[in-house]
Length: 451
Ligand SMILES: *Cc1c(COP(=O)(O)O)cnc(C)c1O
Image (tube, rainbow, N blue to C red; front, side, top):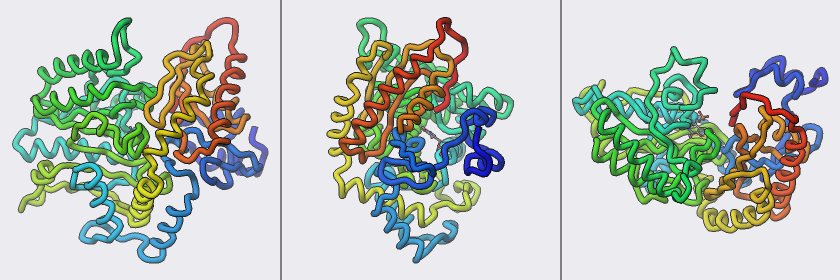
């Protein structure tokens, strides 16, 4: 129970928390955080927690980074906000130019969060085909277990039952094709074999449905919300070739995996292919402000460029291209260069691998895996509420981790020092043993999967 008049109890009275059965908070109140610095969160009670999941995958260079702070303070004094229809400003122009240089996709459309980016890409794709005289190409296909956000349009391509089941009647469901999840390897099969098998299934599907399909949407290399499912880059090469052959757009949802998470600046770059759309958010502002962007090609842009108003993309959000958020994004991109972040991350990842070796070797862990700065370990357990219990045991040890179902994962900020690396590894292992000690003698049904 939350003590009366604390932030936790006032929060429960007035704040409806995301992705939460609020009744659960009767027993387990929300943790009030007073401040944050680097990879650490500090509770109002003075407890510190290592932010092992980058505050839902958004933080890159730690909390309160002085470079981002200085950029925001400077921007706040110059221009807080101006509407982007009919107006423009230096931060949005510079950010668009830099994202174009990084990806080769030269036209940036802005939204405020990830789900709005997903919907922008889907709408643009279908509208492109309509402008090309092919209005029948208006449906979408995604991967089994795909996650692309939770607004009604985004739910159509999100294949996670827990998030979708109550809203079925509202959603125009997209089809799904098999995931190239490398854990699906049969004995003797490599991750690449699984990718090729999944690509053949995609080919079969496209051969039948391409005439009514606008786009394939996928999370390149890691399907995060489904439980950090990792696949071989060969799938992305195959998917690109198939989308070309069948005239279907390829949307790379890099909302979680962009900005160095998978080891390269963007995940699709490891396949040496170019998507038709790239969705970005989460790390885009270094975890400071809500901003999303959809990048696309000259060809798609040109299909909207016309004397006729209705052929344009008439979509808008009030805060589109907010100058503060764009400045935070520019400062974040500067940090990648100034700190040589990708090379540093490669070294940091090896240190975390070494520290977490006992976790990977734990007798109850299966499929220990890593892609760039994302680690995952599947835990063999009968606990139906493993994720919730593990989270509590980890928090009690000063570590924020939130398993998805039976998958324990870490997605830390890029700024862990040796002490933080050791803390992550030691507390994660201790929390696992403490959680498994809670196991009842007989297994219980129904597991939960909240990211
Ligand atoms: C988080 C996420 C989204 C949705 O972003 P929100 O900002 O939460 O709406 C979409 N796609 C992927 C891959 C994500 O991980």
